[in-house]
Length: 385
Image 1 (cartoon, rainbow, N blue to C red):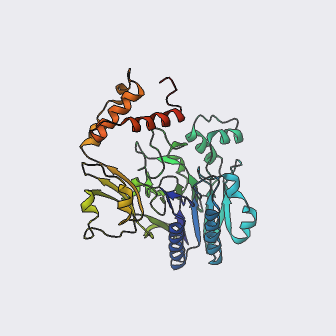
Image 2: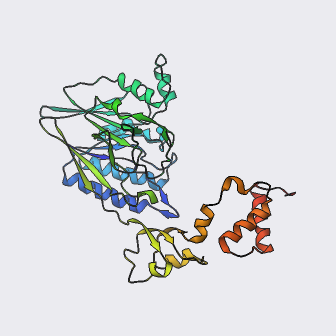
Image 3: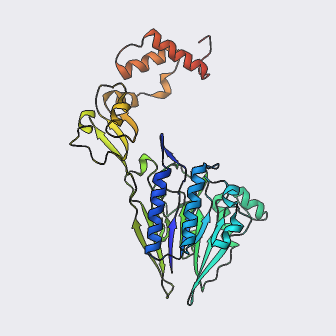
């Protein structure tokens, strides 16, 4: 029996000003080809199906296309919600979808719903735990001592009976940590001592009863604690922090002896996301340009700031997402003690100092008036400032 593990599709996501819907369709078609080539029996989708709780029409059409294509190939789908998804929207039509063997669990009702696959003497039980908050779990288990997310997940799993004679797989969307180590973060997650985004950290040992845990939420593909607890990672790169990721889709093969084999099948995107660095003249030299259609983050080391640098860059790299500088001026700004710079200083003084440090010249009165007007409209300063 074979299963593909996906997570963090983030359908409808943009990269800067660029709409990624065609890039996402391209990678989903690649996954469909892998599923067909490997004769997959099912696909596990571990949350953050959409990028926004109110997805765009294009994102909804793309999910419909993907699920319909899997169903036509006779491949079952086991999908849960993530923290980016709207539980109710993702759950819409789920009862009808079951007739096509597309199973969706997006609204937690106190039970981790299970679906089973059987081949010869092997039974695989797939448990689907959608993204939940500790308060939701507390509502379902009012007599349990639930102080944090770790308590909540342990309570849910403690009340989920497993058949040890079967292969038990859990699909979940949460921030799981190993022994004193957090997973490598990438994407839209924000690092913290206890959480990523709104998801509190939990220990991987709460999954000891499961043979495989298909995780979503972290965009970098990796295992946590043991190789059978795994983040699939996002199928394409969604941020600068992912430029060095090698994207892949885990293929789980369950042998007749109920052993589990994991193979990471590489994914090749329509366009890569790359970070290039150097002097502008060198980066735009046609002899140095490769794959100009890729999404580009550029760091310029030129000492002089140039006008319309994005326009110039996009003549060579049309999909340039962002440009920043790393030179003596920016490094000097980084070393400024921000906590003290505003002490007893007027808005005009601060703007003049900032302008002087960046451009090594004085700001004109016309430019200063523009800054004052913008600051007043933003509520940063008032008429008397």
